[in-house]
Length: 111
Image (cartoon, rainbow, N blue to C red; front, side, top):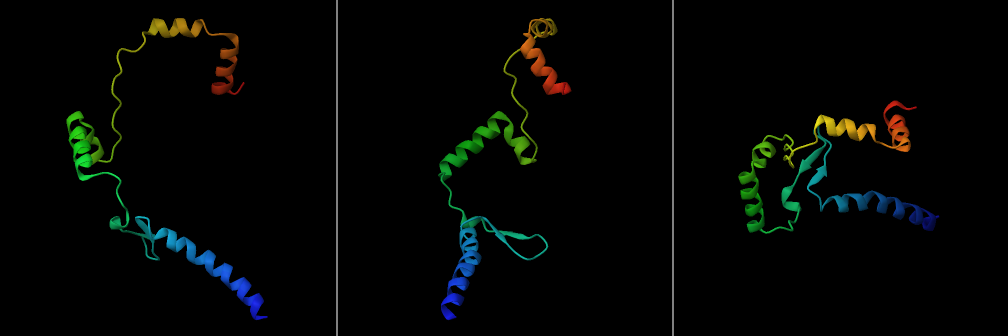
């Protein structure tokens, strides 16, 4: 009876203990409180040097993306140049193949 008990208890304990050990290396730890987690930033090892981080920070400040990231909003995309004119888009739409037209109809209209 004790062999059966040991054979069942050990795997159950392993299943319960392994996730908590794996979680010890992460920044976030589960807690039973209202928030449900606690942050431990010192548990994470960085792969960048301080000089690399400072260089990236200066670059973000120089290109203006730091302003947006500081406020938690997405950084607007950069213009890659002039887009197509209305005439170019209409000409492109008129010259698509029937297969492409069927694919677009299926995609947008479900037909």
